[in-house]
Structure formats: C-alpha cells, structure tokens
Length: 241
Image 1 (tube, helix red, strand yellow):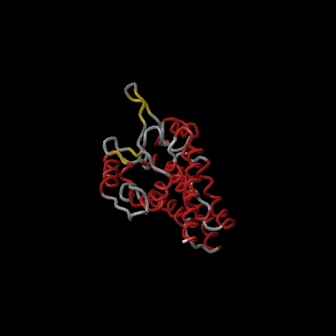
Image 2: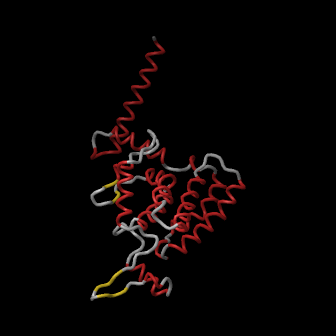
Image 3: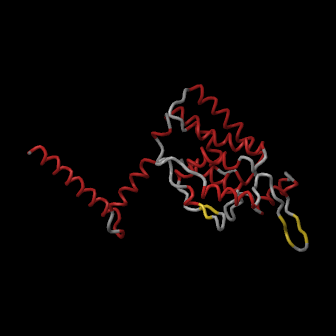
C-alpha cells in the first residue's frame, strides 16, 4: 500500500507540476543535460534569466484548474468507498493536501486515468493508464498463477515505457519495487490479507477512546479494559437472568 501511495505521489505531483514535490525540476533538467539526453528539455538562458521548457508530461495551468474544479465539485463516490476527495482539494491555490493512503489507493486505481484523459497526449496517457491498471490487477480478490506471470511481464514493459517519458529523477526505489509485487503476490497470496488498511481503521477507533492525549497508550489500554469488563458483566448478567 505504501508502494502504491509513493508511486501515485510521484506520478501525480509530476504531472500536476506541484512545486517542491514534482520530480521534474531544474536539478532534473541539469542531470539530463549531463547525461546528454532529451536536448529539448535543457534549461536555457534568456535576458539574464534561466527558463525551463515545458515537458509533454506536465499539464498546463488551465488543465490543472479544470481538474481541481472537477475533483472538488463534480466527483461523487459511493458511501463508504473512500473519503470525500473534494475535501483534499484547494481550488484557490489548485493544490492537494491531507490525502491518506486509502485516498491515494482509490485515486490511483479509479480516478487518475479518468482525470488525465484528454489533457495528455495519447502515448503518455496510455502508459499512465497501464501503470494504474497494474495496481488494480494486483489488488484483485482472485488471481490465477498464469495471470500473475503475465503481470510480471506487463509491469516490466510498463516501466520501460515510463522511462521513455519521465526524467531519470522520477524513478526511485518505489518504482523499481513494483517489479517484485507479482512475485510477492504468488508467494504470499491476495494482498487484502496483508495490507495495513484494517489495522489503520482499528487504530483510529482506539485513538478515539483516548481521553488523556498526554498518555495516549495508557489511556487507550484503560478504556479498552473498562469496555471489556463492561462487556463481560453484561454477558454474565444475561446468563444469571
């Protein structure tokens, strides 16, 4: 789940050109110049200022505004499917904030391909769609061994396509870890039995029980102990009656 979140952050922040979080910055352009690749993206000087050419995988300002407005006011999801994505969008600054791991999980698998469709060129959009499709497939409830072996080849080809689109700085350990997920799926079984979402929901309920925030763990234990005693007394009373 954390691999999925970090991959989503890298793709989304780079495409949306989020300041301070995008992988397409001036240092990345200098790296490409040092490696002598993609000459059309090199930094250039003009009138005593340095300019950065716009890349094909980065959205322009009107597209970013339209996407933020769509996510804020028009996207509706079923109850209990995820949190309200619109609460994570600031239409004034056209930025996103406070997105949890499960929000990124839903966004990566369901919303990202729809969000970017029509704003990016077809080869770039198809590659991002295939990357999102991979995460949706490995989270399936049922998978046979033959499908998992196909996923092994599928993600390898998809990563090669991503390397042809995004700069070298885009790829960190998280992107490369995706190549091992089909093998892990074959060894350990469906991902639903191994991810952390149920435990995070449990921790949220336990933290709600805490009254003394200074001693959080002790307060949770005491409240849980009182609840267990009350439940035992309730069952004992019913047996006597």
